[in-house]
Image 1 (cartoon, helix red, strand yellow):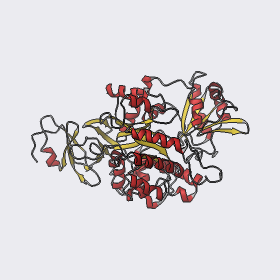
Image 2 (image 1 turned 180 degrees about the vertical axis):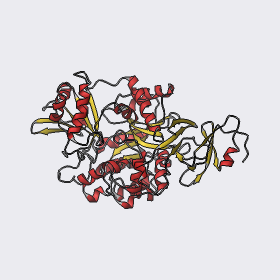
Image 3 (image 1 turned 135 degrees about the horizontal axis):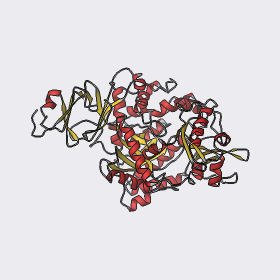
Image 4 (image 1 turned 120 degrees about the vertical axis):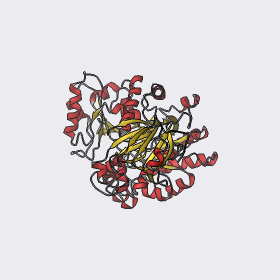
Length: 541
């Protein structure tokens, strides 16, 4: 191989997976942040110049940088400073309360305490914490404890008092306020959470920028070089857009981000973004405007995803429909006509039906065969809905980490028939629907090995297999995490594969992600090296 160009960086002696249809090679040469060439060690070393750096991968596995195609980057950074009440940190109710009590002991009275991560199904009590539980350990601090899914919170009496929420407070549309008789028990689901969270002091701008940087560096440690931030504006409105711009200008944006902005009627920043010219596609390959997100239902584990059939042992509960059909269709059409790609939250088959109907109508009125509207989560699509999605070019954007973390809960609340078909990624792959994946962090950890394990085994954390026919091969799972994520962001020409001309975003792992041993994904696999645009940004060697 001959060239007048000398590579800036050359990786040799590895097993480098370039893409599902591109195969593997041992070496890659990088120039000006992009892949210059791939091939054998000798071929790539022929591009070495006096200033070229060479990294010996020592036989390690490398692939394109992973793309977490649905998480909340700012929230992830903020939650890293909250009380950890995940099942690992707080497996029992008393352990959860002890975690809160420890934070109370070091926090001045009157200051808000936030916690996140519990799953009532995994607690020893099998129920949500209550207002009275929290009052026992925090009588003088307002406390908000949020379920892992983010769709349910439990608050104590002090939080209710400061927010002015009483037994006479009307329940907002698309919300649930928990009551024991006429007394509030502290549970707030979906839109009801804002009754209390709106009373919490607004997040400072500098804290938003710091959260972006903190969470982005956390992703790099897992080999994740790109993400989608879902529902930008949900915490601090347009300040979140400004924080991203500031992080970008201050070189504090560690990963590529595709911004999906909040379009919910009560908190939408779409109009402000539209007036500023911030529509889908605006930006550069590090920070780009993505879609618009509207929440149509809740979560399956929290029994608030909008289903066509009721939840187990709750014959009157179909979940929560957030908005009427007419409003969803009007919002989707308005955004579609303005040029926005849509990336709306719909988990239950009731919500998915509402959403794809709105997409179909918008596309019929204003055709765009390459708009690539997305269904975020898409947990319980039916075969008929999947055919309509395929025909319209609508993409499922699920989080296979949910199978690992919450699969046993799905069986518990939905029963075996529906639970086994949760997030049917194998079906979508066979239909050519290009599903992506992600963590929905901070709902789940951004740890990609849980996600990869679930795609390949369909096993929950408890070892239950949710539909073996939905398993993917190792190469398919990597394609979902790289190429398909890029496709759904309309970025397939710049990232997702290691081929000449694409960004040299590369992750190097200490185990072979194409290997047959799936157990090591949960026990022994880690990211050794992460490269973004040809620069080493994480090094754990």
